[in-house]
Length: 374
Image (tube, rainbow, N blue to C red; front, side, top):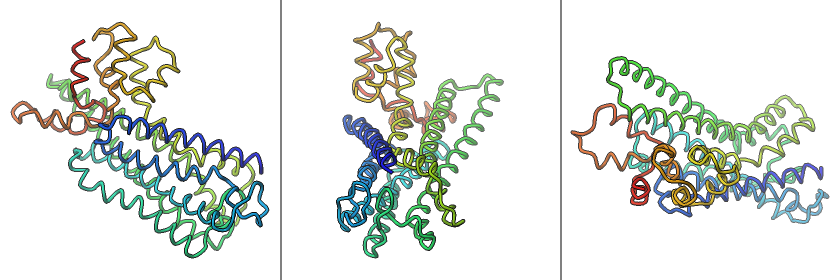
């Protein structure tokens, strides 16, 4: 039991570190807050930190009378831990919101201004569900002491419906929305590739549209990383629910795997969020070490200046895609503002439909223009 408790604490600490880095990456550059997916990830990371802290406390908030290892709390602290753990189920719903945002941008050509109209409702749904269920759990005394944390009694077959209502429903919705978004985005990009192949044969292929389609593929890959991290984190709840239905007690292996992977959502989010910027910076600076790339991806807000000052400068040595990624405004946003500045007469049908869904090129600003001029 002591080993499981320390595994749970270490995994929760990694999740807190991951979510904290995401928060730093977003709030350290206020311009990133104008992008909806960054606001979604910011809210998700804050909630994840609260849940990870509650999870990392393990048995500490449990009443002393429970005689759990390390327990020195009261019934009130146990209930508080259960409430904040329940609030963490806003994370699956925020994951669904993020997937929906990517889908609307890629397949349905939503622009930021359009998504902003529905964004408050999505935030409300994501937060109200765990808040209401948490209040119900506190009001009816549903949160009790378990072997590792305080929450709904997972070992009581009579509370299987409660486990589904409090947790399984959010996880099921998130899984369904994410899979739906990935499949439709993939189908949309496949159709675009077919169109480009036909256009290329007729010598009518738009190079800019081809580049944007290629960048959309990168976004779908990023969405898949989010989904894999989400699945690894929450699959254990489904396994536990199945065990409850079948009246089967999970073995020790399940307990170890659940303790390792369930608290790691913040770490998976960090991997998915930073992967595009890390990959492009790595391509732009192949002579730098892995640690250097990690450090500048996470903590350097002026990566373009690092490239200028710490490496030989030349536009031929740093591809446009890599240099754009160094601005770290790398998701689906850049051509909204560019498109607003273009006249209708200067845009082709292909470039219009493509530019509205660009996830990877940054918003043009004075710093980028200065960097391009070097």
